[in-house]
Image 1 (tube, rainbow, N blue to C red):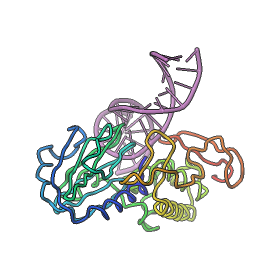
Image 2: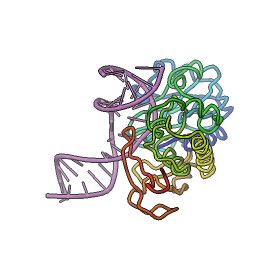
Image 3: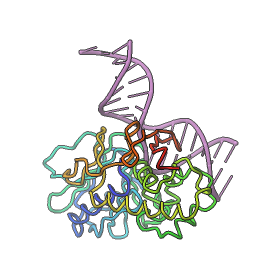
Image 4: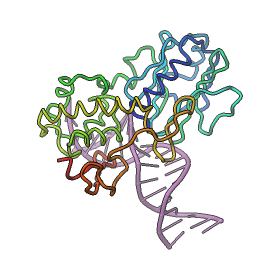
Length: 271
DNA sequence: AGAAGGACCTGCACGC
DNA sequence: TGCGTGCAGGTCCTTC
């Protein structure tokens, strides 16, 4: 499930391989994955030069000179490069061909929380609703945006309008590192502890980006744009380790539900 | 405004 | 073996 580090890894690799290249052809294989814009408008991307590939929140953004193609990966989305000779994987929904026989392919099995958006600016569509990126938000802004929130702190971290990029994995990991119980209401956490959480988010995300993102042993492993990173790279402290011993204190990790998501925490380390 | 909960979608791990 | 069931979860939408 791609979060900020996975999207960042994909965007960096695609930028390195595709920046400056021209679009030769765009094929939308499944019309309803295009959530913003009309299928006919995609054809107008042909001939445009890809200026830049970057990440915003969990989305990968392709800057095509005054047109922005935004891909939300959702639960199971993959964006990768392939040769035109290679058959599409199942559930391939969008293919953008570039000069030099390179195809950018978007595939997604479960199409949950995912989609493609064709925007005129990066202030539109799903990007308009995002708070500051979690990897660069400064501590004061972080505190300010959480002030007065009565939701569980984990629900706040998952709320992309508060800060963008943190999903279930990195929320659990950051809260563990900061020693905060995920169910704790945000407005009842001391500022010093929230500052520690800010620091934890920064370090967890930075480490994950350095590792090239997380790969889980589930049905939809994360892999880089060329498929080269499909192995486990990030050691999770709590995520997915329900019932196993805490790596710090040894007591059994507990599981609960916060904002509808499975949440794992250490009852002793996280108060 | 902010919070809470449901819908969406598919593949896989289960249990019988 | 072969079915049915439950589970995973990010975003958007509706309701309160």
